[in-house]
Image 1 (cartoon, helix red, strand yellow):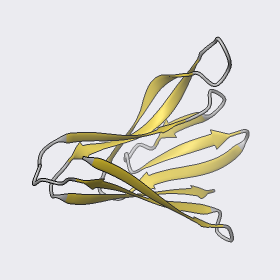
Image 2 (image 1 turned 90 degrees about the vertical axis):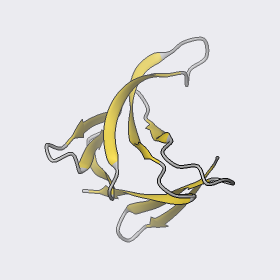
Image 3 (image 1 turned 30 degrees about the vertical axis):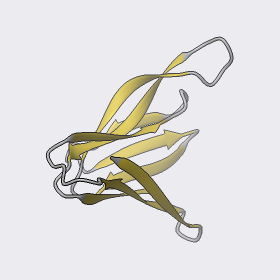
Amino acid sequence: MVHAREIEFYPEQLKFIGHDKIISNKDIKNLKFEIRFHLEPNVKVMKTKDGKSIFIDLDGEGWKFSSDNSIMNIDKGLYFGEKNSFTDNQNIFISGMTNEENQTIRWEISKL
């Protein structure tokens, strides 16, 4: 399996649109995948009640993360960005099952 990411930035709209491609050389189906977006420790995230978006608070600025037809969630992690130490952080992840030879997962981050 190969993972490839394309990101487009629209500065007028303050929006990022990403396409993560899962590419298989063989006809492999029904494998679980997770695509993770690791965040710095000072970033706060909250999933909406309907589960279709995740709000991001970055130094008082609001952003929205969403993904079409994908399961999104928030997970705890460790941030190793400082020498000889680590800090708790959070990350956003998209999970699912492969369902075809080449699959594209679309996601978007936009400023509120």
